[in-house]
Image 1 (tube, rainbow, N blue to C red):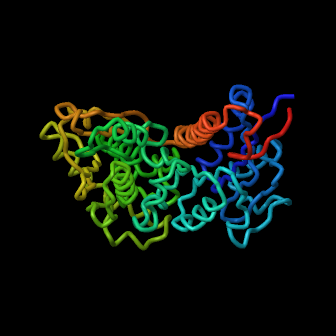
Image 2 (cartoon, rainbow, N blue to C red):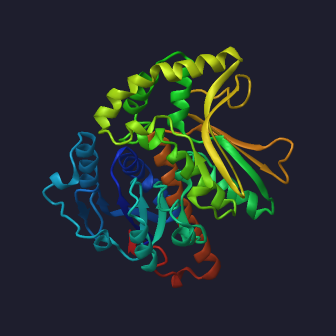
Length: 381
């Protein structure tokens, strides 16, 4: 009988991205097991209301049920077999892959507890890797951690930075349109769509966070710039990056519903900025620029015929100026928003982690009979 390494998966967060991760995982896990000998087995799925947990593996039927009820807006606590977790530490399984697709700023301690149990970590949640350097540095220094989907959704942005550094290149500056959400809104403004309408459309398409201010504040872009800076070897703190929000402070404390209603007040402001840019042959783009000393993110008027001006919809464009790519920066471009492409980035990280351990294991133990529990538990098929 062939042995298959069963990889326990703990999925925390079942919003649009979490649902897409589950769907994609179910679609590929059988073929992945045939190719690699590794079976991706969710043992825990959690949202803020409760958890479904089975250390022997959650059935496919139950996983499909979770996808269905979350698609209807119901929470996990509505399932009869769900339970509450007094602490997320209660659901940690040694040697699992913890997949954090929340937007929570409280996950860092949970991830650290999982790491101490031998877990590997995959992040789409930017907040842990954008925490204070003294608390977050271990996430950047560990081969057990992947966070590709924190910047550029499914684009190979983080891996590009790593490859540049691993091949001896030195990164001098990074700049780019790093928000598919704000890219979409800027493109809509360019088409003459009012600011308030563009925001509602972005929200309905699932491009924004549940509270669009999480995107419009510029903090999400600032976190991405900070993550790239740290990956490039610059251990900056968040206050080193200046941020220009796309709404005034007076709207910051409103409820989400009231904020959405209030966005009409800004239609004339951004229409005027757009017309002023177009009069110069320019367009508006929300651009981040960062180097070893700090950076800035904000709305910039750029030539229509530039790489930035050519962007459409939710596309990202991120350019790296390095000692080798000096005259012409190395650029990564493509769709930078949407649940499906973000989930694909998460899934790719899960697979790359297991590939890493499979190769590491083969290198260290050519005799496969001595392979033991590096990533889960063996079972016979």
